[in-house]
Image (spheres, rainbow, N blue to C red):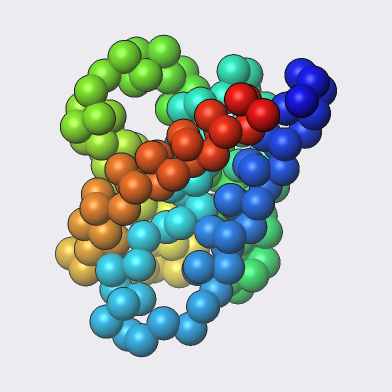
Length: 164
């Protein structure tokens, strides 16, 4: 496969993974699962920001953030802003993060996802007077368990695209 075809396949993988994460957010889960459901789009944006060679992921993060706002019926720009902040922070520290062990990387991703939750909670507080609860942090537990598997799967897919 030529370099141009590899780039097209990689771009397709980015959008396909983000669309799948949107679908996972839209599935009507039982209430107990909803409490623990991670912010799938944020996990994907964190992964792609970590592995991108440029800052175009921030544009993608904003676009999928707006799409998330529309699909979830939330305040327009709430997810866009939090995902752009997440993408910016991961992109700026990507070189250092790539050299860390999987456990150090996991710790940093959890901290950055916590930051994403804080930004969305702050926007809700300013807009609607929402008072954050401890249960808002439950998705971090699931994200901690899911992140290594997402990273492994997407790394393998990228390697197979590069090698084909």
